[in-house]
Amino acid sequence: MNRFIIATATLLMLAPTAFAGGDAAAGKAKAAVCAGCHGPDGNSVNPIWPKLAGQHASYLVKALKDYKAGKRKDPMMAPMVAPLSDADINNLAAYFSSQKQK
Image (tube, rainbow, N blue to C red; front, side, top):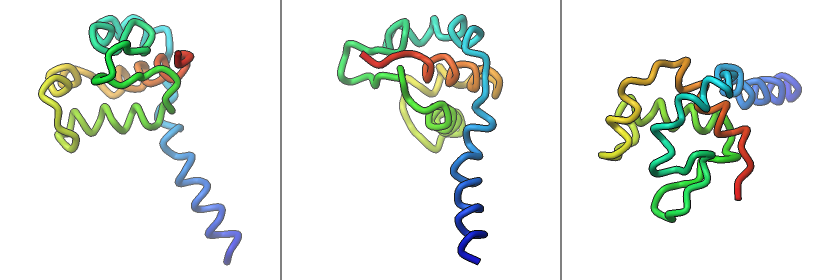
């Protein structure tokens, strides 16, 4: 029973990364609009805007989807994520997660 619980917990932890397998090159092209606040490579120089570089792709996917669904509220992010498709979100997550945080 313990092995089943451990295996199930492991799969649940890894599941978000399965849908976050986007195309980093496509994400880089889409990230131009993000650069104004988060920097061209996700390394924001302003402390009020988070650094996206080096974040886990699954975290970025969840955050963007939560902004889009209205679960996370931010007047600047809401219009930015509104037009994004699931593929766009996965691609952005792949790009920013592949960048080195500075």
